[in-house]
Structures are given as structure tokens and as C-alpha cells.
Amino acid sequence: MTIETQIQGLTYRLLQKPADLDKLEGLFKESFPEEDFQGVFNRLAHWIETSPSGPGVQLVVCDGKKIISSLSFLRQTIDGFNKKYTGFLASTAMTTTAYRGKGIYKNLTRLAFKELPKYGGHFIFGYTVRESVLKTEMKLGYTLVGDSPVLALPLNPGKILQKIPCLSWASIWTTGIGKWTSKLYLRLNSYKIRYDSSIVVHDVDEFPQEIEVIAEVKKRFSKYEVLKDSAHLNWKYRGFFKAKEQHHFVIAKKESQIVGWGICGKMNMQGLNGLAILDASTLPEFEDETLSAIVKHQILLANKMDMEIIGCMVDKNSKLFAVLRDFGFLQTAHRFKTIFFPLVDNLPSFIFKANNWRHTWGSSDTL
Image 1 (cartoon, helix red, strand yellow):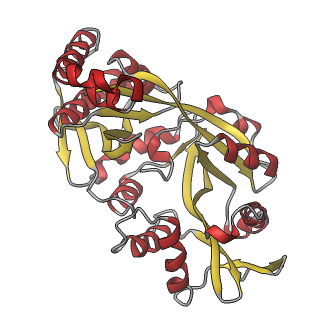
Image 2 (cartoon, one colour; image 1 turned 60 degrees about the vertical axis):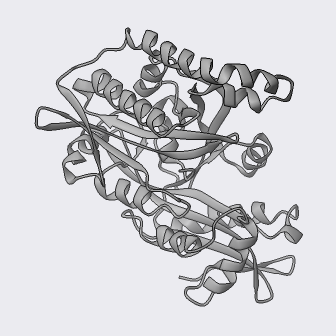
């Protein structure tokens, strides 16, 4: 299948492999100069191609033989209301500096709206954090199906004060006291948490197939969510192209039965060393107690790693949101807006309603 069109002297088309990879690598280097580049680009190309849901689609823009822009779409399986859909996650937009502000992203998006149905897609979705970008996307025809806050728990208030110019002096006095206060705050909040001593959380190198029972239950729920079986989770986190360190996988067992799993990883959070709770899922009959055990395990891990803050993006209707609030996580001003564009005409009306979706950091491409 080929895609090629000319707009204002530029060629919009599919990425051609392997012929285009060297040219795309040059664009990647310019777009992500902060990355330790060794192997990152090759992991990106491999990651997009090897999703268990099927290969993604990469659109590029060429000026002559030079690739000056690219937009990728990860193929994802979405389950909900006992139905299965193919969604394309908009990901990794890149444009070389000299061509920015010329409407190229808009043209790429319109081309995707037209062409992605040919690849079996039911809809495109994505996660946006910048209001300026969101305004552009809404004008292009996207609608909102999510508005998820980022929750945060400061573990070293002194480090946070250092980031505020008028209060940086106070960090000298609060670093030691702040750490002690954070631990006391956690301990006081932990008294209202529901625990089950028979639920034990284990670190694992990757998720075993036994977690499929949780994914199967989720398929029947009246909420839309990215499929989170062992194949998709291991692909997403073990192969993520920007990961400098391996993510931390945990499973929760009640006696010999797996009743939940969780994933977290190191992340720069506004200049602070942070641990991001990326996702967690449980069997519904043990949800409160299992999520509490997983979150407690991840907080202890963050303290062990000497993290300065721990955060999580999750929709407000999720049980995980409620558990994090019980632990004392605070709601920040940062939000992830979930955009949605239908590629077919026969989607049910309730797929357009935000309350029918579940969102976590792990559903995005910001891992």
C-alpha cells in the first residue's frame, strides 16, 4: 500500500524501510538532542514495528530527498463494553527547525485521517499536555475523551524549594526536616488504607502470562482501555525506545493467585528525580486492597532509590486515583488531555464520552 501526495512543494508519504532509515535518523537527532543517542533511534523503529497489535504507520514529509518531518502512529488494541477496536496512538511528532510553523503537522494529521482507515483503524487517539497544541488538534477535528490530572507526592520538599527562586534559601533548613515530615505524612495517611496481609507484592523481570486473567476480566467492563495483557505490557515497557533504565515490574499475589500487577519507572519531573507510577491493574474483587499493596510497594521503592518525588497520571474516575489520594498524593496543575478522532462511521455513541474511558500514564507514549 502506498501513500504519496504533494503539498506546497513538499512530498507527504509513508516511511520506506530500510531506504529512509538513515534520513529519518538525522531528523531524530535534531528533534531529540538531549537524548543519549546510542541505539535509541533503532529501538524507536523496532518498537513501532513490533506491537503485538500489529505494525504501526509512520508518515514522513520530504523536501527533495531530505526527510524534514515525521508523525508516527502506534497500533493499539482497545477493549471495552465487550468489544475490541484497533486504535492508532499518535506518537513521536518531529519537524526540523527550519520547517516549523508552516502547517506541516496539520497536513500530516489530515493525511492520517484519510489514510489510516485503510490499515484497519477504527480511530486515532493521543495524549496532549500543551494547551497550544490542544487548540490546534481541536481545530483539526479531534474531540476530547479524557482530562486526567497528574498526582504527586513530594518525598524531599527541600529539593522542590530549590526550584522556586524566592524560596531556594529555605531548602538549606528544610531538606532533612522535609524528608522526615514526608515520612510522617505518609505514615499518618497509611492508617486509613485498607490492607490485606495475605496479599504479597513481588518484583519480577517481566509480566507472566498468568496476568491474562486480569486482562480478560477488563475486556467485559463498561469502560474503554488499552489492552494490557502480558504480551503488550512486556513489549511496551521492556522495548520502550527512550528507556535508559529498565522499568520496575511487580505482581501481587493472594496465596498462589495473581490478583494484580503494577509498573513504574524513573522520570524527570520538572527537574526533580521522580518515580512515575505508570499503571496498575487488579482483579475487581480484590481491587482496593491490591492497589494499596502495589502503591505502598512503589512508594517504598521510591524512598529506597532516593527519589525526590513520586507521580502518577490517572483519570479521576479510576480506583487508582482514589487509592493515591488516600495515600496523600496531591493533585497538581499538570493534566493530560486525551484526543480522539473516528476513522469509521459505525462507532457507538458512548465511545465519545470521557466517563467511559480509563487513562493512565502507561496508555500514552510518555513512559
